[in-house]
Image 1 (spheres, one colour):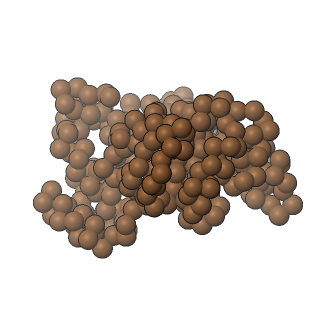
Image 2 (spheres, one colour):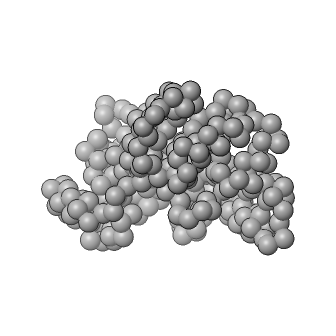
Length: 293
């Protein structure tokens, strides 16, 4: 973690809160949410400010506008969160199978969208369990991907959504799992990606497994390109490349979801979409360095 005397760089704050750097700067200009310290053009936020921004982000995710939150005191923000929790629906109940997943799940943030209801060290421990809780989703870690553990989970928890995290896999098993409509990730995987898979509504995933989350919205990309004064024009070129990759990822998603797409071709399009989003994420990291400077 990038901390200096309990101060957090703006890039670290963006990563820890899920609020893009450009949005933090916009909030500073519009609402006075200024950092605790500046060193040149680098902004530093305190631990208290980090927690305040996390609370604001949680309320925004629930549909409340930043304009109604920016000038509230910490006590008022806490009261709003308490009110929202009182009417919030119960969180999906999730069980995890595997040592790495258990560690990952326990490191999730307070804004987690799932309830960790059960955990097992491995598939053997899960198979030996005689009384299982009611679960909305099960996340299983498989060193080698096969269909047998998935079938076993389906038999014991027929109504639970299954998410698989694997380390090694043969092509035939990747195809079989994809055809079974089970969402899969290759280890390592960020916990928010797993939560997204667990909370997706309906029988089909909301998005393909393993896609990298966007750091910048289209509006933020436009603002970065328009406001850049870098003589090399690198930020503008990066914005162009990122926008092209976003468009390509959307295109491959449409191709994979076409009515005439076979399971094999859908898997190829999904892989192309996944690689495009990860390439975009690397370019977004480069762009973030320019934005922070």
